[in-house]
Image 1 (tube, rainbow, N blue to C red):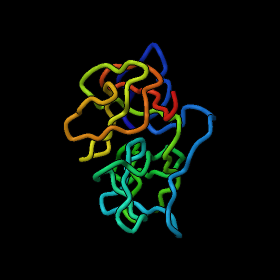
Image 2: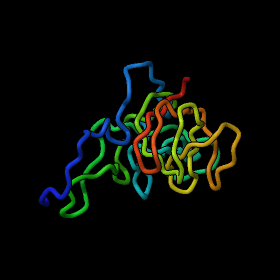
Image 3: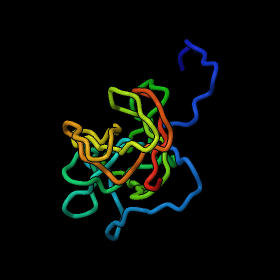
Image 4: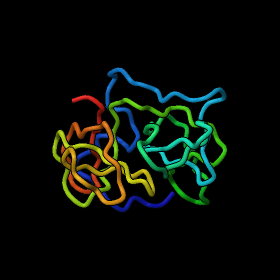
Length: 163
């Protein structure tokens, strides 16, 4: 573990992928045996897509995503000498994939997020950005999720499927 390098005056509200409320959640439906991380693994707090079998998940895809992966102690730290990790390795079971949930995500967009903006899933890596409903975000698809809190680029935002 490395020496502490900075101190924040305010504690972060959460970590990407952490559930944001106890409101009802909707698990993504899977086939018998459950979801499994694909060859590149799956990153917690990002959108995922199931393959044609409905079993293998990836952070890349086409069309609407299957859901978003929640942070429920299912990721591993597998990189030598790293202090944290949010990756579920290839072949491991992926337990909590939600198609409806209140969850904290990192704003991967270039601009600030305002409450009520729609969530867009980037097809190349599952990252989440926000824009007005009906907008076009290059390489992304509009989802049913909304921003429930505001935040700048790179900051945590609470994302919900109900407003």
